[in-house]
Image (cartoon, rainbow, N blue to C red; front, top):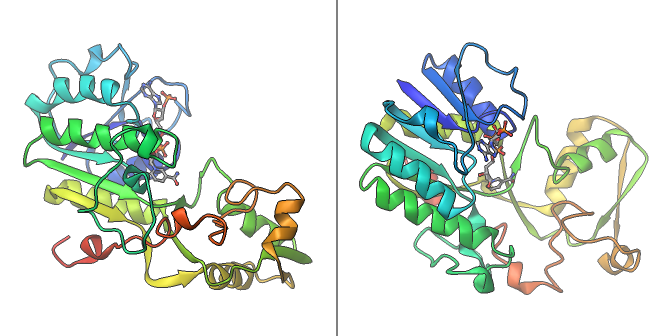
Length: 284
Ligand SMILES: NC(=O)c1ccc[n+]([C@@H]2O[C@H](COP(=O)([O-])OP(=O)(O)OC[C@H]3O[C@@H](n4cnc5c(N)ncnc54)[C@H](OP(=O)(O)O)[C@@H]3O)[C@@H](O)[C@H]2O)c1
């Protein structure tokens, strides 16, 4: 398959590019050449800027495009307008943030998405992702695969949103964690997601899918215990009242990864408890 990735060199895109090459596809990468431009010399390197400099994509044909870097509907509209007439299939990497609000557990793909920033707990990111999804789906009718990942983890993650726990527990000693042990946690390894997206591009999968895991419900307590076991150190988890961490100025999620502080933020109840049955169904 002749495959184009819009992006491809930071995190998820990087795993997609590696996977595409390993699966024997002929790969083109479109990016500005700022982030790890030395990666994947065996791929065709197309340099440009999504915002206003798409010239190298003009007049080209691909079997499929995977867009990992689309954040702004205006910018996404420009690349889709150029690519849709000559590209067989489109996969757009959105986010579960596209829903904007998460008052209930079990949100599935038919739930409404955020119409604008006022409906979006992510301050506009989710509403923009939802608008990008619509742009792509309209440009590729019947040929569009929309992926809404939950929290991504794994090698090359530029954030500390999971790896901080791994590092802290691997260092041994006592590691404090808020005692909201029953809080649900969902996450997906970017390598697994990349593999599944590539399979979807190969099969020309169509539709919208929440893409997170694990298959069985996971709690915050179990997640941290499993990290502790996997790091194989004598680290001890000390479960403390969340109030203590808040009093020290620590923010849920940003400073204390995976912690949503649901007692004080019930609006996030469904954020790490979405329904991912569609992606796990045999047809997907
Ligand atoms: N992290 C999470 O937990 C999470 C959760 C849900 C959804 N997501 C979504 O998953 C995707 C993750 O993407 P990623 O960052 O890992 O993708 P990536 O494809 O690995 O990296 C981003 C790529 O975009 C390129 N790029 C950035 N700005 C550009 C521009 N103006 N023109 C052309 N290329 C540009 C970068 O290269 P240059 O800098 O060289 O241009 C880089 O190759 C995002 O869409 C994100 O919204 C993430």
